[in-house]
Length: 302
Image 1 (tube, rainbow, N blue to C red):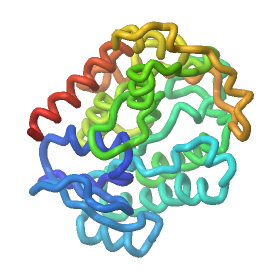
Image 2 (tube, helix red, strand yellow):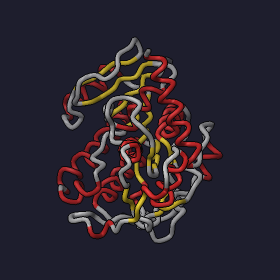
Image 3 (spheres, rainbow, N blue to C red):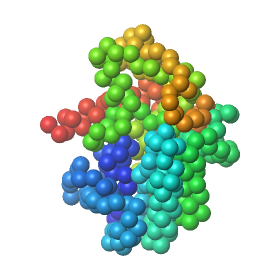
Image 4 (cartoon, rainbow, N blue to C red):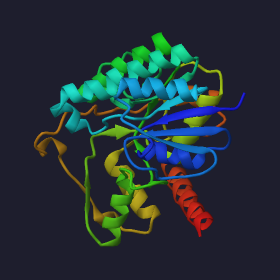
């Protein structure tokens, strides 16, 4: 059977990398926006995924073999201030997609978050209790239940994703940071938030692999380095040839309207390393892979 992957949030940062990393089969890219990529194996489906009738009709037409669900309201502070909208997009939409996956026999791969954890313990495994400290994490955790209990799919809990957009503009901290460094401007970041950063190319490859294998359940997609944000940015600055003096510690609690974050949301990737053919990388390796992949894409487009 030919693979038919339905990809939600197709204009997003992670989805853009998925579209660039695809290898075979047909991909049906779902987005409210206009097409960003064309090809014999790419079908752009311009619709509002929260329109349940349109979404059902799309499933009926495509009958996907797998769904990679990346669409979400991912701005943590926005979600905290707009709880009803965040619940509708992050939780209710995921529940509807899970039900459709079950109806049409599609494997569901759901892109969740490290923000489902409270940040007290750190290096969380798949079996650790999830206790979100912000509404974004709460909406994603509620959605996980539908994926596991209704669709019997995969919940991929993704750590801090770093990289540059492989398609479209995307929401890339690394791109913003590189532009500031190039202009000689300071980048401010907290030193008390610990993460296990993973690059966007590896995330895309891992999600595609999960869409094509038989694994079901939760899986932590994270990099190999447990590091605080300040140390991470300093490391990347030096890797790119810039001085650490361009990186400064800030206190995010002084930012008005900022929702709580888990202090140590690092993830244990032991299970992912054993299960997946896609290797998990450290920060330096991940940055190298992202920049090399972006350069190769540029050559292919010339």
